[in-house]
Image (cartoon, helix red, strand yellow):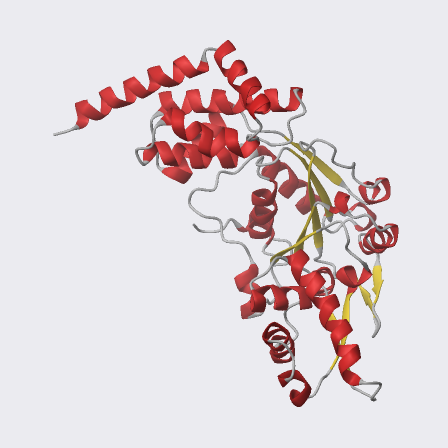
Length: 372
């Protein structure tokens, strides 16, 4: 797809080859939403207006409503490298700022466990382009949260390994610092799960338009092209609200709901190639009723676009519509028998199971007519 340069923010900026690879490329299946148009226009219009600049966005809404897809689309529109950080409960300031790690001798590294050896070698071979979390994620095939925990383990191990000797240290920036300093579009996923007030304070400070981050080695200023896109779910039962001070740093917010039924169908058609509009209409109705019922009954799971994509794709591949309803949608919401019963009752009340069977019969009939 040829990218639209209408919203490019810094056309004169020269990206490195590595950075060019980080700018998201819209697939042919991408559908431009009203939210994408609105945010892109607002940011472009205000980009050079000083204190009126919009550079911190909040996308708050349903799981599967397209928040991350929208954040990536903004990367493509603005011509900025995209990266992300997924927040977790026990984040500490090193996860916001980065870590100072000792340079350990190769003889000491060889005495470590294989996983620790792999981690240290990956860190030392890095060119400074990646954050420490990303280095460990790639080297060990683990999640960002696991990488953060691994970093703390190897820091402790390194302290024990040096035996009080004078050693050289090297600073590895966090993913947040890298994006902040180099001027990337950073998606910050679920910061509302962070427990430590000091961590939230550090994040709040970084998101000021004229903010700075105090690193152990230097003070860095916010790059003029840096954009933060905060994405958070509101669907899960018991989820904490977003910190008020963090919310106050936001200059534009979008309430992300499930898209309209017609847009849901168009997205599924584009992504899966399944073109049976009658069947997709029934599937969309079922997804929306299940989502509404789950909320009303405080069921923690969510029925959204992801479920719709995989369910429609399974049916397109020949799976039973009713059987795959459970494996692709209902069991993703819950496997509790009483909760499943509530969901089934809601579908029967709206006669959607009967509609699903009618759509299946019509689908078979159409398939038979098109057979040679």
